[in-house]
Length: 331
Image 1 (tube, helix red, strand yellow):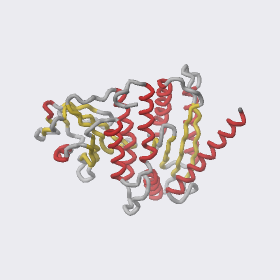
Image 2 (cartoon, one colour):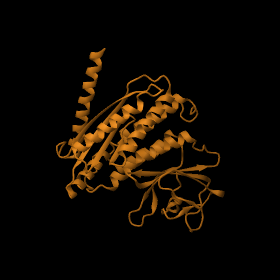
Image 3 (cartoon, rainbow, N blue to C red):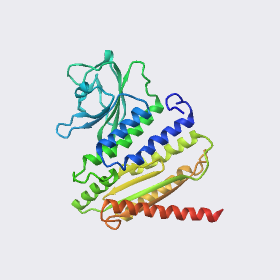
């Protein structure tokens, strides 16, 4: 089934959403920055079929956003795509929290007050902000030629998901404090960075892994999509302001609680667990989910990132195993 020619098929659309989310489970194990960027660009260009595509990242020296990696973008024009947030692009203000569409008359691009630049046959640019914990890390950008498929609402959602998955990548490699430890995965880098901050200010830090699974059978894809959006919004609203929220897959979520001890982390998880149950109890769709989670505090959870990750997975497997045993005994 071709994701481009069969986009109207709801089963295919759901599979695309699942696929884009599942890419994160591989992406977060990557230990090389360039490889991680390649995976993000390949997702857009090879799977979603949008070319050219590029990733902007802020230059720490002057705050300018430069294209650090691209696919099928003419290298000769990359240098003219740098901008700062106080500039405009073709007269449009650059938003930091929502995507924007920039139409280029006669393929001419003007950034701020600089002379307009000809972008070959490009007629439209789409920019998707890459935000991590309310911090703008960069942008994912599409360059569309005349007659090329314009993203519809569904494509916009997928591209926003890709931008969300790219955020921990840009964050973790930017905050890497020990260049000689490039073998660490992205999650390990985030854990180590947060542990380092906690040690500096002598504050507690805790970690959690969540697994959410359907407790009912979905006959159609639309109710399942609605249910996924519902619990994703719950996680985003409750956890995003508190720490580092990373969606490993559609059903597995990793979270770091800076400045929270184990008791506080357990309380937060228990409240979220209750909210998920309430969100799906008594609704007309009949959807229901089982949410399992484990919390660990540092240093009880381990001395380094690898020990912490292993301990979290082991505890989660124990929880899931207990649930499986209970379900089997009830049959």
